[in-house]
Image (cartoon, rainbow over all chains, first blue to last red; front, side, top):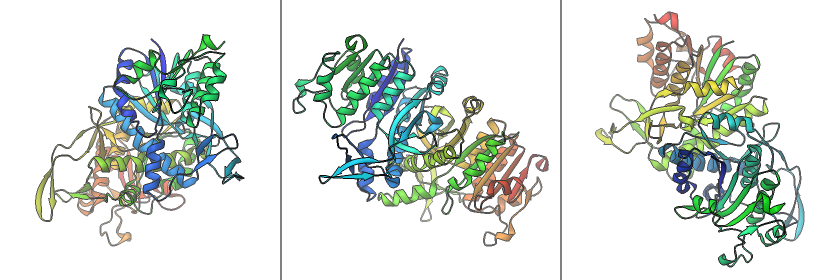
Length: 274
Length: 274
């Protein structure tokens, strides 16, 4: 029996509920499973509907993230913790799984520091943003997650995380899933979304890099564009912290989880990197 | 040290976050505390903003409840579980309390049956509503709540509950709080909202019934109008199931919890009813 962390993205076209029957099967087979999900598309839709349209911050290095002011954080928690999390929990419970939905803020599951000042590029100019409520997960309360798992519960986790002082912060869910997998000593981490893997050419779905080893890590990092940069970094962090196997793959189709576990997508393996 | 369930209403003019410093004080003093909160006003605001305005069902006996179709349930979870719950958890965590926010659906904390057919009165005619996603809490997983409390966590609970089959249902949060208090053997249940207590005359805040004993229970039930009917019923259910003391009082003002514990509002006491 394995311990598996399954992260389902929240991008357009992905419904994490659709993957929950497969999760139920894994739980039934006796695996210890933690589900992590995103909610970015639902957040964008809600933000537009509420007249506070989403904004993206582009860092000097070209990495993109959501501009998270206080109002955005409220919309964010409504979409991630309210709409998506409870829908996923409901779907798991109707499939007979004793799911418990939690944000990383709850019980201090995900603790991280807030970015004090973000250097961002706006219209070619560098600006400093000081009030952004975002950061990065630095520690995971594995004891609490194990308490739930030992009691037969399946945690369904989603951002936000919290600072040590208790402030809610938007964090990247892929890297949070990686930190979670590492902290509980997971055997596998699946990062599933609306892309089939790390592509050499983002225009060509047939250019997926099948396996990443120490020689090809640089290639994967170089090939990754946009959101994929975070996934590759998450994979690296998980592997470096002892997770045996990470797969970046597609969440779409009826057996998406099984296919990813069988190696569809881009596979990062512990041995291959060292 | 007492076990105290504190329910803060979600009506207009109530911000449950404002009561959390007092909750932190109780936790610091060593009490076992569970917070339950509503979110009806936030749900109404969000429903209006999203173009799906709230509707009320009036039963033949005059009791009012929210019409909860599937879209309303989504809006409901966004407001209750997303916006209000995470705001309350954040406020508690910034006050040093190890809060964990959960809906009653999560981990099967609140299980109840869905109303199959609701007889409602619309424009003087009786209609049957069959697709409403609402019901009543019938069992509480006290073991899970005690697991959290024993681990030093403070549960922050909110609707929806779940059916035995795992479907999310809208439930009355006052009666859910009463069921919670009874199941964990709480010493006190506080039902705090934007009213000062059970009023003999709803137009006169000075007509608050101070104490309810067996002789005056009928009077309290008769006097209660609208939402207050549920609170009085919740108080009766808690007292009948062994909770020593229930106070229906105001959530407003800097020491609202302390004042309610000292008897401000309408006090239902175990001894006085028998």
